[in-house]
Image (cartoon, rainbow, N blue to C red; front, side, top):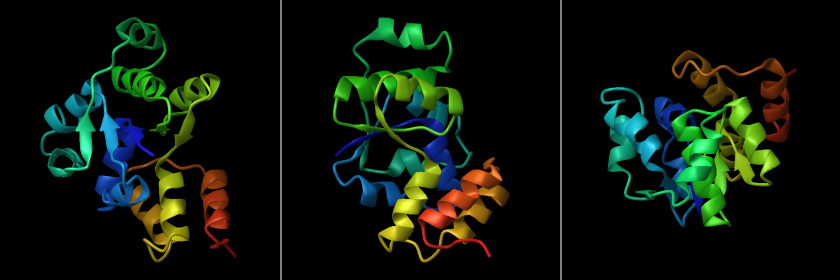
Length: 165
């Protein structure tokens, strides 16, 4: 199964040196629309994710065919989120990787399968790709400046078998 990624997941995982986890989770590859590539690699030169994403052979830029749908989505989402959702819809069997709440709501309304940074890390813990989740969630907070509610943190740790005591 392929995935279509928005910028936030790529940047967050890169900031904690775990971008490679996506290639393990999605061996068929990860697609990014042009707006995401531009945001992470071109505009983001020197920032977390830029070099990692640019050099990842398993990440492919794919155009979105339905520009009108992207335009419609941009009324409520940024360009990268809109293109990622439109591309996931276009691909049909892809999972869309999103973190931002409004974008996730839109994806859910469109009945798209979705996963966020924390979900990828929970999978990595369960699959034995990472030793523990707690340290990586802490790193997301300190290194990645990733905002995570305590409720989401508790649920992720529970799902990974690392309940907080």
